Amino acid sequence: YLLVRASETARQERDAARQEHRPPGDRLIGGSETARQERDAARQEPWPPVPARVRDASPGAWVTLGVVAGLGMLSKYTMGLFLPCALLFLGGRRDLRPWLKRAGPYIALAAALAVTTPNLVWLARHEWASFGHLAGLTETRGGSGPLRRLGDFIGSQAGLMTPLLFLGMAAAMVNAGRSRSDPRDPGRWLTFCFGAPVLVFFVLLSLKTKVQANWAICGWIAASVGYAGWVWGDGGNRRRTAFAWTGIALSLFVSTMAGWPELRSAIGLRIPAKLDQSRKMYGGSELGVAIAAQSAAMANGGERPIIGAVTYDVASRMAFYAPGQPRVVCLFLGTRPNQYRYLNRASGVRVGSNVLIADHRPPTDPELVPFEQVFQRVEPVPEPVVVRVPAIYDEPVVEYYLYRCYGLKNMRVLDRAR
Image 1 (cartoon, helix red, strand yellow):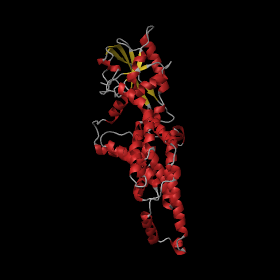
Image 2 (cartoon, helix red, strand yellow):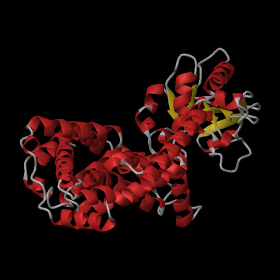
Image 3 (cartoon, one colour):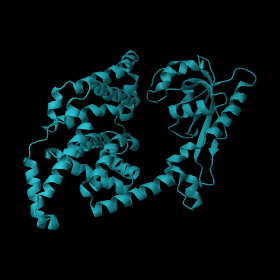
């Protein structure tokens, strides 16, 4: 950041000096031929030297960078793309390439490894559990073909960013990619290196598997910065500015409507629940009440059953909303590896245990997991938990189906995906 800011300041000073020495007619007319000659001359300029305050940055600054990158890696594995993006930024321009021979970047790398190594050691001792989870997310599945997945991914990004900002940021990335050979403007090259490769990575991944809309969000951070510089930098551009403000207004409207469903309903805008991600905020309390009632019925004065699910999202919701917030289990019946591999035993489950299971699939669904294979007896609860929010949605928001499962046959379904 300091390198880019200092270089940008030097560029602005040179541009101002050049503007002062232009003939008055050129300053007034600003002919295209003069502009072209200036651009050609700029490309022939010597690359600016590395500013002293950047060149002499203390090791502590590089350590801080490495620690932040390491913490980011512990938070989200997409932070692992930081390293190739940084290498592209430094190695892609000859004025930045000397940094690869300096100690600073390697101090940062060592600090990042120091932060992440304990986690890597733990993963090595536990069958690389997190990477197994990632492999399950990105494995090739049947269903739609690669072109359909690619179209779905691009459409999801346009919807997530809103279409106008999506087009504007994509155009800004194309423009920033052309700045690689421009010694005056390393800032645009920085936004390109930390935005475009990430987005291209997920585009290619979508040809192999379904990519969730939020996975690529880290690539749009740099793209948004690059878009702002493209629109308002160098004195601004009237058409780009109008387009950008229109996109921002549309984005604010869509975000407000998505995050405030009550307001959406108040103005008469109703959309199907299945198209609204905010619907997932509802249903936890109703599920907790149903769990309490069915758990008491299964106990019938004796030992209460363990509660659980076959997906970690439902299991986590049950753990939060069930009375007393008990330990829950997640049965690995066609479920990819997740954190419950190391939490299931804490619930006290054992061979012979009774388990109350919640699932989104009804008993008649052919894709319902075969509970009868791992329990001696299974009784579906006749009435599902139907959650409605009539003030916002016309149809049910979510439905949970409860299953009374008696006599766990073995413990294998608690330890790993099958």
